Image (cartoon, rainbow, N blue to C red; front, side):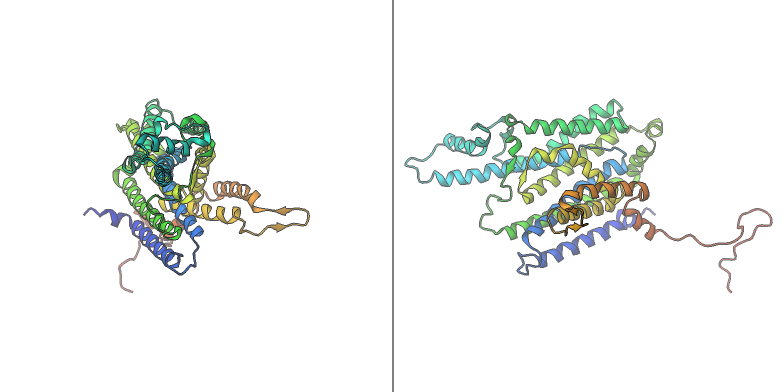
Length: 410
């Protein structure tokens, strides 16, 4: 009898239960609930951490399960952030402009309102005209579609060109990194329509929710991030289970043999690459309204390298390992770089963790690679593995072999 998906993957229920308990606990301790044990700023940090866990799961599926070391998945994360950020800036600026023009002697025309909005948004880069890329920024539904489909389309085109050419291994990693670098350099230019190095700011001010406190809005985003993480975990757990999951793991282990068996390897890789890019875009759309700002530095290649480090530390090839790695590194980074970690005075030198955090992260990655190749998730695998039965003697079928006396009453 074929087992159900949940029966084959009991860890999914454990993860969802743990996520639900964590979400409820944070909610009751939040400032919005009146307890104020968890401040609004730390609540935003937790919400952003959940988003990073989601993009880490996507990275784990494309690398840990399918064997594609993508050094560009954080670019899809950033594109999702830019897509929702464009609507947030437009809608918020439109409200400000409409309020300022209410006292005018004559009612402003739609074109005057549009020109005023353009001056407010793009005046920082010396322009007042809306670029073509902002054509749908006034529409929330269209921008939400862009959050999913723009990263997906970019991944589809890039993946189709790369996989059909059978680019693999380190060469594919270099190509994904080159794509990320090209995007970040393009976004840095002022004439791209995304405000260059200034980026998009004020994203925490959600239009229509001005009457709500930041504590309440932050809690809502935290809930949305938790729901997205739970749904993403179930989605990818379903994808990597069953026959499909066996095929992509086989591609990771021996792509040539899978192709020889008649499977269309490129189609499997293209599906995984595109699907994970779309989920990364959703994670970015939830992350940056909590961060409040996005600029081209978020899409730089180093961000995607950090993403690979998180997955490696947590344990690639394990969805919960990616969550553990991303959450651990994200929270530790906030603690060390936020000034909470005390400096260490050696007498001749003072270790300031704001300066040494990246060194500590790099050393941790090297140590995990050398001594714990399965990452933190490997510890849970070892605990969950059934111990081998301690049997002595030869229980084989050969003549004279000792036979197990199992099932006999003592």
